[in-house]
Length: 331
Image (cartoon, rainbow, N blue to C red; front, side, top):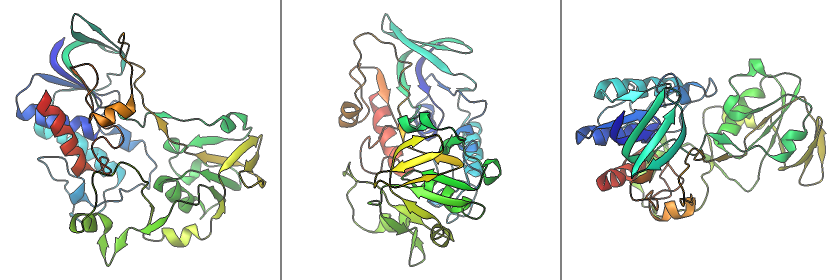
């Protein structure tokens, strides 16, 4: 099957690109590896909610069926993504994992589990959070462990003493949830700051719209946001320095201390999943893609959803819309 444009990945970036292509009546196809659109959300831990309210997470043309100030759950976002596909009648092939992409006579060839496709222009929207980084110390563990993306709820955690390793909001939420049932330590870089998710009754995303700030900033890290009872829960969690090494069940920390654990949940970031690109003379350079706002060195190959694609807040859906719009204009 040949299409003018193929989009790989039906996350928020792929859906936004599909919306704009649909509006322009372009012959395109969206390919998604999961059984259902939104499954990447469904697979996250059960208690997860977005940090921003529904009114800031709507994709172009269709609001989320929630009160605008309600923070959607991960399943509500998954169902919304599926509804979005149905509403705009977006052509999508689910359960189509793309395994290999090559180029021949100016056309891209995509080999999937369900057959082969060709296209004139290719948009890679499969994101950068597909391949979890596995630190060397994890391979030395003789106790059960999980990457945070595989954590679902406290029921599956074993033992009495648990170590959570990670810098982000998900790690904070998991540690806060587990401390109700286990003795929990949390290893992280203590330079990262905490911030309230609500200021004077308003979500920080509301303040971001009202106050001047630099959207062109491409460096810096977002804080760990505190909300509801999370601050109280985290006070019961013992803070540890970053992990230095492991030996069986013994974890060594960067300050020279060590402790024994029964279970580990870690998150050390992700690597981009672009190994499926097998194009001679094409070298993937994330820094250059950032500088070129998603335009690759090949004229008909585009990337959306890379870190800081156009600005400091490119992960924000409102900014992602503009990132994608600029790509679609070129197509």
